[in-house]
Length: 510
Image (cartoon, rainbow, N blue to C red; front, side):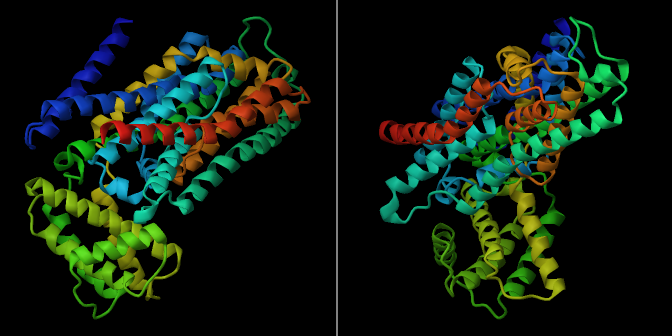
């Protein structure tokens, strides 16, 4: 306990020093801004804390119910592995989640509507997660957060339909939806197949396919595999699910302290100068002999295209002009820290408009056909845009890792009992636990590498169910029906909840 408390205190001190260092170069925040920032960060970290005991409990269920590790040790170990997973996360999932939000709210996140969006979706997600946890139902935090984001997007569209406001990016929703839909099916099928293979290969080792006797631990090799897979699932969960909180925290920081967090201040002068040259070359590549277009006009054209997805002859020239001007404006400064606040926010929004437009045009195959060398040039430019926008300060990772790790150690028991005892009609065997965890670990890690958000809960529960079917242990249909009901109702419930909260916050505070 003393070591545990020392780690927490040391982590909080580190976060405090880093935040202070970041804010030292910006004008002092007013009391209202400090209260708003502290409240928003507390709610965002609260979501990750709840995510910890809600989702990570799935990772420890198999090692606890096969006696591979005592429950306190398993939970502490899973919390530590979650912490490590968050720390090595790439950030791709974080910004994939943000891309689901309406473009005008992302670009104006410092407005009252922007804050109403962030608070509404976070509070809705926490309420649903706590409700399903209290009932011991392993619903998905990823599913919950995406439903909350959709609710805000739909309500924003309904409230501002007359002005042409965007709702949700359906292409991104379909991409995320496919990941959430197919990952449980993959978990179920692969776990069943793997279990049958294990049963065939190790058919002489019958203890693998028997439930544990009392508190007797499994054979050493099986125990090592179970601990390894628990470690892998916890680590993969941290690297995937932890990023969702990171993305939302970055939205909060960009909205409240844009000068400190809108752009990646770690980029050096050489990077800024090379960006100017790359911008000029890219502008000429996508639209030869283009004419300068006023930036305000270009922004209007690109914003309308992103909102409506209706391509017009003005889109590519506007993108080329804004691309060229972006390089000139960035190169005018030796250091991003020297940029005034208004310029930082404007450049970030223009970069976001550009990278989103490139993605849409690329998907619609509306960019002009280019030689391979110029295609590489455009790809390099887009990667450069991401280097300015898609960064996450180390202290944000540490804060999310701490919240997720602590959450894992607190409220794990309700979900663990459901996964370990109630999905199948019989107690989980060593072989089932090993197969389910191995498939879950591989599936989540692969999704993380592809930048796709998947649900630890969905994957692991489906994998456990797959091994139960393969072993002819039978499924407890009452529990399965409850889990499926939670999965079916999570999206509509969180959409309605977050949409209603967004409307309420707009009426009360904006």
